[in-house]
Image (spheres, rainbow over the protein chains, first blue to last red):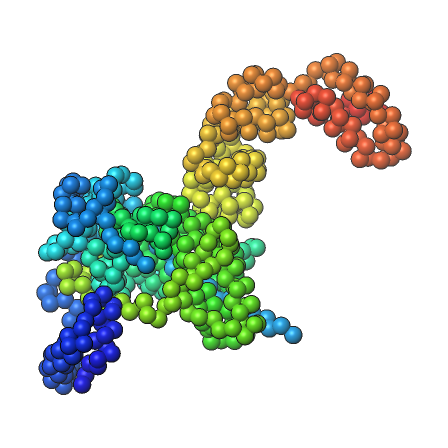
Length: 94
Length: 480
Ligand SMILES: [Zn+2]
């Protein structure tokens, strides 16, 4: 076991996902299969390899500081499950 | 014997940058505006949208880093900071984790004429979150909340100090100096009330002489320099009391309550802070060209420390005056503009630092909101030189200028404030005063020098402050 039940529970909590007992069982098992595979890769000697920050050899991709056209308010809110007076409406936080 | 404690304070400061567009999309950063009108699929966190970095943000970060004596990274990247909160549409904030753009700098502060270096641990770039409006008195009682994404993705710099401050006053002075530097760089509005400058304080205590750090708390919700100082003062006291009572100090976030003047526990730290940072795959990393850094270094404006030096050298000002005048760019500009019109730097400094700042502070105004302009101030000082008004009357004139914005001549005429220098007119008043105060006259003749001041005061009172003090003094002396 590389990842424990408790760690899966913590992950679910941090991501605000509710998992049933069976799902916890299932995901713990699946994650362990994936991580076991990663363990094989970990056996390679990478001491001479620089860490890869990004998969593409690209740097400094940026734009000038110019204002463009965005969405109007109706468009912005049209997919919101609920809105009120031009705001997104969300359930109580605490 | 009670233990002697020392406080250890570090500040995390967030500043909104004055760019035209947001950090990862081209929505405007304009303050205010109807809710959700400065938004696009990018800053709303809609699926499938790619961020594109605003180059100006990198430029401003480098400028801040240079001004704070930091090392500018040759290689830097963005990371995702994962957490769930309704003001963060993507469920992660684009920030920088292990390779921030600036590291290891310092800022010099001055307290009671002593210089102290406060270390800067790092400066990184990130995006701001949206704004929440809670329906109900507060978040705890709110039935639901409303989200406005206009501020979502507005560029921020987070400037993290080393825990080098030892008192609440040092913390306030550090923040004031940092604000001054950012203002001089012209990269942020730095308005604490509007939230373009925000400050969190990490506070711990330890017995003096101990090297290891005590458990720290993080203080939030301070929206003025004064509340920063008050909150940190309170928190130091609270921790010392807890220690002395044998209670544990818990690592937690505490909110400052301006009204009650206390800090209150908001949430305990351990469960909330697990941000699972990882490199942002949608933004390629940055290589910061040394020539660009050099170019920006060349373009740096005069910063508060240099300007202060120049004020001391060129205007012959004392350290104290120069420090206060240069701590706000707008105030220093006002001062220099006034000096160019009325070339007596010390007199200008006295009036600006004394009367004018006093009036501004009383109304909680910035110099930029002052109705007294450098032109008006210079005209008023010239009226004193011409003998039209006395220094005492000038204070009244300045107050009136401050209130109404009228030119000093108009005020002097409208209020009949012209100085009375006419000797025959004043002689009448002087004689009346002498007659009414025989005892004081006697005291003076017996050698009590102070008695003269009282008599001058009486004449000034009779003339509603309009008598020329010089003439009155002379008349009194000849008569006595
Ligand atoms: Zn946008």
